[in-house]
Image (cartoon, each protein chain N blue to C red):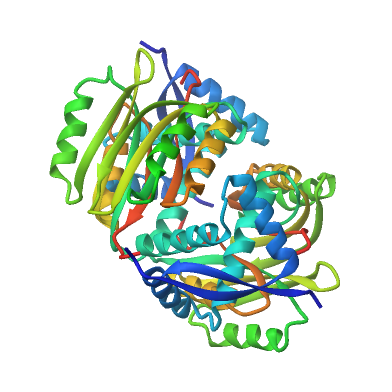
Length: 137
Length: 137
Length: 137
Length: 137
């Protein structure tokens, strides 16, 4: 298990009160947990900005009737520098699907794969979500 | 199949040149497709801002050793107003997992579920990605 | 002066080490200050999402040669529900100006003014930056 | 004046209808203008991501009672690699000020200046807004 340290933080009483109200509303039961989440969020943003190895999730909302779209999406995933870990496919309605692709690689490689997939005709909306990093924290 | 219309757009020659260079770099083979993607992106942002029915993807990067985390995550999904369509689970390393949860509901309900899941102790990073809308376009 | 309180936070040693490295890089001399900034950032995001009274900065990058643009921009500012506090005008090059407009109002009123200004022909790029809130913290 | 070109775009009728409704709501009187704005927005994002020369606006919401904050903020601006074009200062209430700083430089230099200013004790909230680029469009 990881070593846990404890340290003191000083804060204006009113700021702390407002933060406690916000995190209670979001469902936190513990102030340290909420602060750790803010810290990890900041480190995640930095890891992406600096091109470290990251974990990304690409979401594609697409029209499956588009000719050869499925094979082009699959081919792009096989040729990418980033490695695709797994995909999830959901039939949203008669024409449209949601495909969720979990990817591991350098931030820029993950971005390049996302760009290429989103540019395919038939992909209606595509997004890259920065889901994690591999730092030891 | 949807009805396709064609209309004219006027643009500064230099702006068009810069746009064509950008989309070629991103892998587009067709300028209309790139413009349609920008338009759909703008409509997606609006649908989320206005609380319409949307499709979201929640990513959770968590430490599975945290006691009872799995059951609490499952319970939160069952009690949500938004409906969970499917989930994908990936073992990232010995301690950490990536869980990807595809959700359908009003934008605020989807946000509430995401907030609740991200607030669970043991969830290291959580993100909500606005993956789609149900507008007929 | 505000009342300052001090409280303890528990954190994995490796997470704290990574955070200390990040904030040193960003120029912080004090860990509490960095954590307070993350907290205020989270509260600012919430205040904007919930439509409270906020302080926004609208930036407009525009071509001043566009006929009547200046008078239309001024008129829109005078008719807005949000109140314009002050503006800064910079001549960027022969054709283009940067105008920075500090605005106070409910989040939605500020957004509406920004939308209206950005939609004016001749405005090349427009952005709304959520600069502050009026909560007592 | 710039050369204007005209080209055709094909789009699903329903998508175009939804876009026309959106831009009317935002105050556009002209569909080409709305599309040009989306294109310039995409080019601006790219210019920032690729580290080109850009125009940024840094907003600082701060407590002016903090000892020596004003001189430290000024000093940081004078020592920056990015060049400060102009600043706007607003007295928000008895304790707090909003300072808006227009900056020109490489994207990373602008980011470094923003980081350094935001890290100063007494700065409550700081933001960097990507306000423009120097591409000829």
